[in-house]
Length: 365
Image 1 (spheres, rainbow, N blue to C red):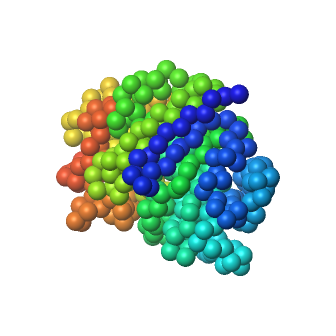
Image 2: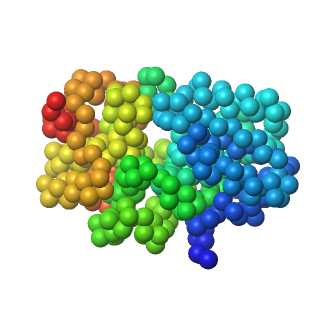
Image 3: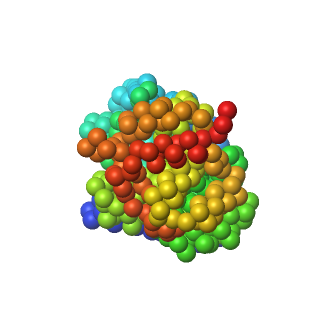
């Protein structure tokens, strides 16, 4: 029997636990306190539902909980208002009440959409996160960012809405495709780069073990990532300051995702190439050394992640990045590296340097 580790996201009366362990899908005791009326809706997708929905359903049904299953199409390209309406349709059809929690069973897309539905259905119902991908377990399930994409920009419509509990069952990663596992590793590396040099060093030593799904390596990487995320969210829930550092690589990465068409590049792949672009820009500003950039590239390459961005053209990137949520006062804000393990937000980047980075980091067609 593996030991379960529990961390807390400290938000006063809205604080909640993150449980990390193996076979947590069988632990009704972790969920029942949040299902007061013995009725819950489980939102999943066509990939995850056949793997884990019956098991979670059985766990809760054994305790007398009535389940409303809602299965969405799978993919970033379905993270939109149309699919969101499928959740509302089911909730209204089954006359779900304010006491009926929505349980997200899946990756980041399922979590983001379920959370947004929970924030807005009847102006707010309880929300439970059961992330089944590495990316969702280390990043998107923690911190209460929810939302959907719009044709003009990623995650542009959403709400800050915290879950009541996060259940990260490491056993669900056994069925995760390698490409998705690698995409999740991009967000893990991010924590090391922005605020945790010892963790970055650890990742350099253990990346192969992590990708081989070594249980101890996964558990450590997930817990350490969640600790970092929880600390940042507790300090700055609504991204007025430090939380923006979690967007390392995301301004460029979201431009890649939107520009290529949702779902062509996985979120973690966009973040990886975007992080290299942010590091390249940091080098041009004279903050990090060439050796640092090489070191960062090497770790992403070992993780099997892209280190060159698609050649959309500098103008297209600038246009896409101008739509990013991180634009303030008409100036683009970039998360950049002062060193490996220390990031800052900077709104004062000369356009000439930005263009140099866009030209240097894109694959030549």
